[in-house]
Amino acid sequence: MGRNPSALLVLVLVAMCCAVAMARGSHHDQHHEGREREKTFLLQDMKRVVKTDAGEMKVVRGSKGWISDLPNIHVGFVTMEPDSLFIPQYLNSDLILFIRRGEARVGSIYKDELIERRLRDGDVYRIPAGSTFYLVNTADSQRLQIICSIEKSDSMGWGTFQSFFIGGGSYPTSVLAGFEHSTLSTALNVSESQVSQLLTRQKSGPIISLSNSHSDPHQSRAWTQFLEMKHYERVQCLKRMVQVHEEEEATEEDEEPIMWLYRKLLNSVFGKQVSGKDEGRSERPDAYNLFDRRPDFENNYGSSVALDQSDYSPLGQSGVGLYLVNLTAGSMMAPHLNPTATEYGIVLRGTGRIQIVFPNGTLAMNTRVSEGDVFWIPRYFPFCQIASRSGPFEFFGFTTSARGNRPQFLVGSNSILQSMRGPAFAAAFGVSEERLERIVNAQSESTILPWGSASEERIPEAIRSFGDEMAMGFEGIY
Ligand SMILES: *[C@@H]1O[C@H](CO)[C@@H](O)[C@H](O)[C@H]1NC(C)=O
Ligand SMILES: *[C@@H]1O[C@H](CO)[C@@H](O)[C@H](O)[C@H]1NC(C)=O
Ligand SMILES: *[C@@H]1O[C@H](CO)[C@@H](O)[C@H](O)[C@H]1NC(C)=O
Image (tube, rainbow, N blue to C red; front, side, top):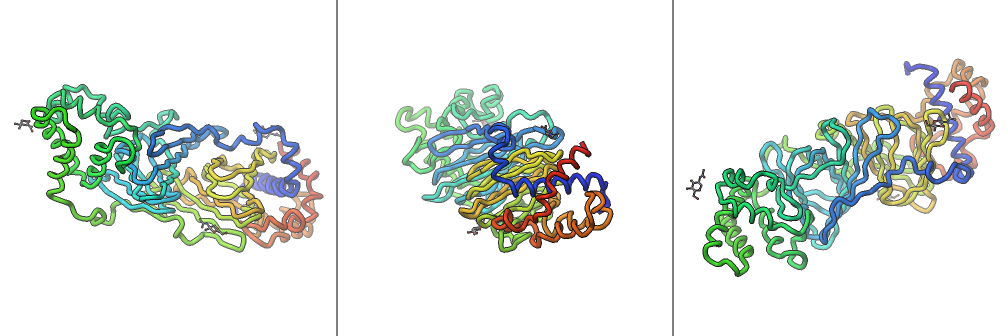
């Protein structure tokens, strides 16, 4: 493999240490130093950035942590009630959406054109930084759950990401409100008082209900209709809205002015209804379904899928990859490391254990996780995930590399232990070649291993008796 032999030796030692740590798993849980340390690589500082009757958005910031020059992403969780809208906005960050559950319609501006896509469970879709977009939960009765990576595309520090709302009023505030009203008045060719009115209507927050049962029905309806239009019509719409309002001002000032305004507006727009949304050129961005993809690896104990720019080119512009792992009850993803990426994982279903090892061969974290937990694994750190015996363990995540991040397996039949057998290697451990062979051949499975029997049978006696020698080995190296 053409690599520095001492680095490999460290990897192998770490691998074995990991195996031993697992064989002794339950002890480690107990006498590891306190809960603080145990949760080092869990991201627990979840902040709610949006909360309305119709939905919410929470964000957990990625830690900069141990290796500071690496890109860092935040993980966002959006929940929207049936028939609701996340009003038009743009972010200073690249967004990769993953539809966890439900159906969505997402509209975004791509090369000055509005593109709408219907998304369903498992779909992945990128929205570039600075591109205006909105999200609609189209289902009548199902809640929409989205998990997204939020990656700042410029390198100007790691402050939190920022939303810029286009639609808006008193809450949220539209970015248009930032301009002087005289400027907008000129730009829109309307009076300043009309500008003020335009920018104070929206009060229900960034996620609003489109059904008339909640929030302001006039607003809901207006937004609903707004969503039926195409981009250029929306521009027209904005203009007309203002014009119509002007007439309205003069005539009937009190009676349901907004309602009247929107109805009139919509009638005029509906006069020239537009054709289907998805027709058009093929180079426009599309979604990619992660659940439909054939697993890259599959055996009796589980499956794994990784998605990078070679499969879904928009990821290349973001520098983010995705993966999905499904372990059967009691199975484990063999100890491995990511040579080119930091990884952020989110538990989708079930419970399991994440073990992470420092590069110096000490246990960094050994923690039980369950649905909704977010963990991160710094680049180079060896780790493994183990499903609890009670049921399957599904997790999903983002990696900070859009080019195939090929995990290096430390244990199993596809591991570097297998590739590195031979007299020199045995000598590196100070054991006979025979003994090394025995250890290396004991595990016949690769990548996803039947952990259920591992603690008793699969991890050979030899490795256990190696424990002390390895500990000495580490002392020698560090
Ligand atoms: C601005 O509005 C006035 C009347 O409302 C109209 O006559 C004029 O053409 C408009 N100007 C532009 C640049 O659209
Ligand atoms: C994961 O595997 C379980 C069965 O072990 C299956 O029911 C479930 O649908 C799988 N999940 C995904 C996302 O493929
Ligand atoms: C191993 O590295 C970690 C993180 O740098 C450190 O906290 C720990 O004390 C080290 N352990 C040993 C035995 O060197």
